[in-house]
Amino acid sequence: MFKNKYLLLAVLPLLLGITFVVVGPSSRTSALAVSNFTNHIIDDQVFRDTSTMSALDIQSFLDSEGSGLAGFSAVEDCGSTSGSHYSYYANFYYCGHNASAAQIIYAAAQAYGINPRVILATLEKEQSLVTTPNPTASQLNCAMGYYSCSRDSGFFYQVDNATWQFRTDMELGSGNNYWGYTPSSYPCNGATSLYSAPLKGGNNITFRDDNGTAYENITLANMSTATLYCYTPYVYNNPQGLYGNPQFGNTGLYYSGSYNFVNNFVSWWGSTYTPEFQASYAGQSGYPTIITGNSTNSVLRYKNTGNLPWYDDVTAPQLNTYPVHLATSSPVNSYSPFSAFWPTRNRATGTFAHVYESDGVTLAGNQHVAQPGQIVEFDFSFSVSPNMPSGYYPSYFQPVLEGSSLWNMGGLAWLNVTVQ
Image (tube, rainbow, N blue to C red; front, side, top):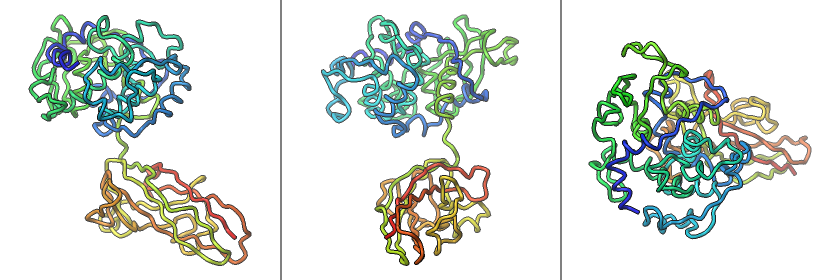
């Protein structure tokens, strides 16, 4: 289907004006700053994070929302879309076979490197498909509001092609080739009646309505934000909306097509921004078995999934900043009976044993600083006193930013300790 996609690149901005559906804001509440849905809709890292949900996670989420998609399936008609990637991503696609909506969403996310949460938020933004218990054929056929819904219809077609479009626009707008396309093919590469300049990260854009009236002037923070505006290039005056911009003589309120996207994303998952300090579990040693009166060493690994570096007790004092320590958890700061050789009874260690690149194998240049994407290994001991009863002791841990109000970095993990 490359032919249609080449055609789409030329006419997408106009066609999206035909197929865009405004769905009323969700009844869920969330605190949204203006910048959350104007100049900075979403972080690039969040937009591209394919690890947020497995197919099972997506299915559970749809179940929890009472979505009609939870029980929906469709044939993955691989011949209907772009083609060559299906053999490359054979582990994700079931070409010619029925697949659940969750599997279709997951496959598209993995194939094109887009966060599955972005797909789910778009499905809700365009057709309320996440919260509708009994979607109509029309909703399903135009699931992502992609291209011409009357012709390019079907749930699989819509999800797969729209996700492809997100990644393609992001790459082309960033000056990269993608799936045989060149940057000159980027569909939002010039001014139109709806916006004043190419939709690219860093560009200042005046958005206009269909009559040419300017309603908002913003500087696009990044290419992910530009990609979402390329997909839905609307900022309209709307008395029922939330914010106005008197700069353009608009004393009313304006409504952005990105509002529902952000509202859905934030109300379900907390933020479209990468937290400054965030950790995800990345591995551990086996569960230890310890003879009473003895000790053993264990390992926990965490990946820095935030957007700022981590420092340990070696480097943090040099920079007068907060160090990252491995703390007991569930509850946080609980005293451990195995802590005889720890710095304190609720801190297993405050020093990084090793820091690896994202592959988990290559040592980083600095073993006491973990940059975003790098993996920290904490090595520490479990010590068992002579009078400790035999038994089974689950021990919970998480990294914390010691002394900071942002101490909770997530990343709960545990080691089940057997004492003999």
